[in-house]
Image (tube, rainbow, N blue to C red; front, top):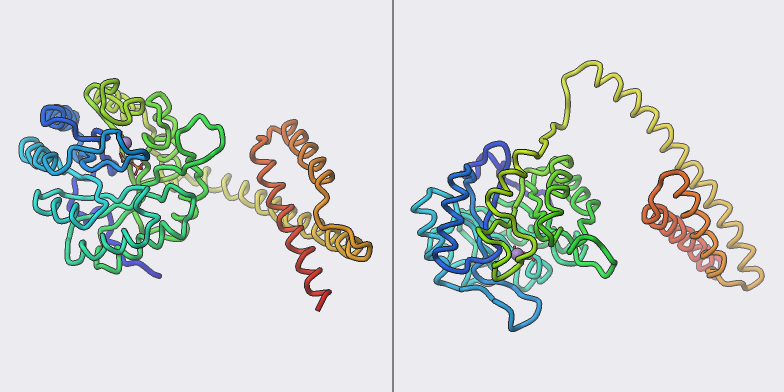
Length: 362
Ligand code: PEP
Ligand code: MN
């Protein structure tokens, strides 16, 4: 579906160099909300976040202050001039936010994958003119992310954007959530008109790692950042480990390097053109090599079928993985990359052998 999205500059929000949203994971007390708002406003930040209803994985942890927090946000907005936003998960949340003049809402990562919840939110948002940001679903499924966006768009919301907050993973990782950059990159390729913000706080889960992920988002041309900021992070009622102080946020923003998609320099353009032609040539060689490899694989498939030998030979596959990962490491290619590459090649080899087996059996 071709979505009609209002360009970020026309959202009626104060967006200067980038779309920066900062504020605590959760609104805790009126003092904490106002203290954060004042510090952010003094630092020139103009959009504040704070969770009022918190989707927690397990019951019993702090689930947000609820309705009273909206009055605190409204007060922060009036006192400092900040725009304020919060997470909505149910139609009643949307209605309450409108009542308290909340300037923007976002949909959380646990709500996005649920089409019933999203449809109910879309119905509640009909005729409403505030921007809506949709976080990626917790699972790495681009279809659910797009589907949620389409439901909200069908309700007549055109000030629509997305937040990349990473994906849950069972793999050992330094991050709390796997950034899985290829998913937001693919999203951007398909929907270049949809503003995209990175939430490094929920990707990292650790305040020390946030700068690197925020910088990577800038290098990938994201429109902005949503960063969790708390006046006293160790004492925060939720996500204590990943929140920055307002001063740390300022330090990070000063260090972030913002790049452009293009350069006017003729030298740069010519040199890039040469290098791109080299890359094109190498990609062609890669495709030719893969195609030759697949032809051999199909011949092996014919031999296996004749002898009633299985498509998968676990020993051989294990040898390939170990050998290629080791060779890759000697060529400065990461283990994960070589493993994923070989898995993709092997999956296609199996698919082709199986397709031939089925075609042959007709
Ligand atoms: C949050 O923004 O505090 C939050 C709960 O995030 P997510 O939906 O990304 O887990
Ligand atoms: Mn949080």
